[in-house]
Each structure stands twice: as C-alpha cells, then as structure tokens.
Length: 359
Image 1 (cartoon, rainbow, N blue to C red):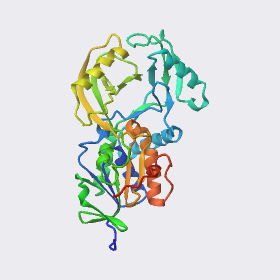
Image 2: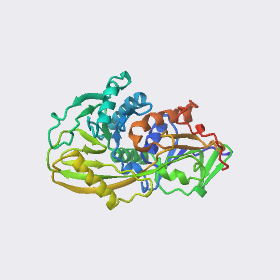
Image 3: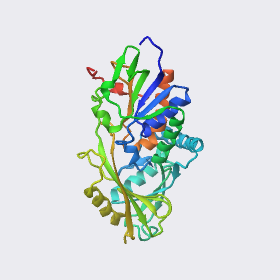
Image 4: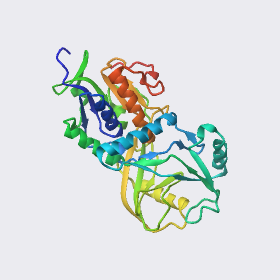
C-alpha cells in the first residue's frame, strides 16, 4: 500500500479481549478503530467474570497465574479509576469437598510452596453449618473474585466512542483485502487487522486452521431471600453473591450445541445442582438466563499472533473460561509485540502450530 495509513490497528470484536487490547494500544498512542456487531455472539456478555487461580478436582494452578493475576488486579483497578465505575470484586471462595480425593489433593497442594497464598485454611464439616452441604468439609480458596465484564465493556465502549474509535458494525470477511504492507477495508487503509471474535474465529478464513474446541456455558441470575456469607461457594457448580439478594449460579458445559440461547436443559442442570450446595435450598427466583460459547482451545492456551502468510492480519483469542484472569496480561504482551516488536509468550504464540495454511 503506497498511501498513508488511516489507522494503525483495526480490531474486530469488542468482547473482553478486544476491549482490553484496544485499551493497551490506545495507551501506546496507536490510531485504532474497533468494530463490533453489538455483542451478538460475545461470550463475555454472558460470562461470570470469575477470577479463580486454582481450578479442577486436582486443584491445579492456572499456567502463568503468578504473573497474570497481580497484573489483572492492577489493570482492573486502573480501569475503575479511569472509567469511574466498580469493576473488580474480590471475594474468597469456599471450596466444598465432593469426595475424599479432593480432600487429599488439597492436603498435598497445601504443602507445596508454589500454592502458598492461593489455598487457605481448612473448613471442617462441623464449621460448615447448614445450609451448606459439606460432609467432607472444604477449604477457603484465596485471591479469588469476579469482574463485572458487562460494566467493563460498556465503559470502554463509551471511552472508545468518545474518541471516534468505535463503530457498531458486523464485518464481512470478503470486505477485508490484505495487500502488501497493510489491509484495505471499506475505503480505510489499515496497517493491520486483529480479530478478537471469540469462538466465531473458527469460521474466519485466515485462522480457521487453529484447533478451537468451543464449549457452550449457561448461568442463571437468582434472587435468594436467605442471607448467605459474602463468599463464592464452589462444589463443581458455583454460587456467586453479587450484592443484596442477587446471586449467579453456574455453569454448564456443552460442546455440542454452540449457540447463545439458554435452554431448559441448562436451567434444569443448574437448579438440580443447588441441593448439592445448599440444604435446605432457600426460596429463590430465577431473574435471568444467560448463555455464551467459550472460545476454548485444544492445548488450553490462547491463540495470539500474526498470520504466517499475511502478517498484517492477527488474532487475539482462545482464553476460554479464564479470560478475566488471563486477558489483561496477554493484551499488554501483544500490544508490546505489535507496537514495539517484543516477543510473544511462546505458549500463546500461534506459531506453535507449524502447519502453514494456504490462505
């Protein structure tokens, strides 16, 4: 492209990934434009926003959490100040043992210095009084909480719009014309385009060769009249207090039906799990049903980087259910790579998949 660029970076998608990458690039003085279809397929709008550094029955630390979690906390607090709204809510998580294997995993992890600061004190069955269902006891997990992802995305969207950096628009791939040295899109000359489309990237003609493994998740909003401790409760399914009598209950996992529509089966699965957390189950009302598709990947690592044939096309995606924890740090690293040619984390760089696509 011989003419000067109108913008440096065009970002497609304003979910959590696109929002935080846009924030990083603006902070580096880049000229950007973010295009979004009105969040019609953004998993972030239906996400619980959990910050959970240790997950699964074997209580495994998320890769890179020692760097990612403190950076995420710092970035979210900065965004609260800049956007003028509450975003980060730090709350302990009460993990209830479902069987002795989990209890043994906690005992072993508690002796590991690498887990110090994440796994807290034991909760005996006697200490966990009704309505909690914990015949095997449990423990307090530390450095947990949640992000109000919708408030964050709305705040960044307002910030982008005020600066002329946002447009609500669906993007047709045919309208993207990569040329030597840049990309042309509807008369706009771009230095590069970064796709932050969530699970829809599996249909992107430039990145459909990456091994996504998307999974649908559903959560419910509940009003519960009974006062419960101000802590998240986790026994496979989780119950999250959001203030007052507002709670979130989640989450399902479905690899077959990949859409954004709540289902009766999903509602039943979640409500059937309540007696595994609380007995007796207090009176409640379902106030909202949400569904989204997590952009999971084959190796559980993000997809970040530039296309092997068209390096003016990039992707920032694949954070699955851990986006609130991982995206801030990776957005910083990708922005450094785009703006200053810094190296990407090898485990997230799409060059780990050596098969070069044709297009």
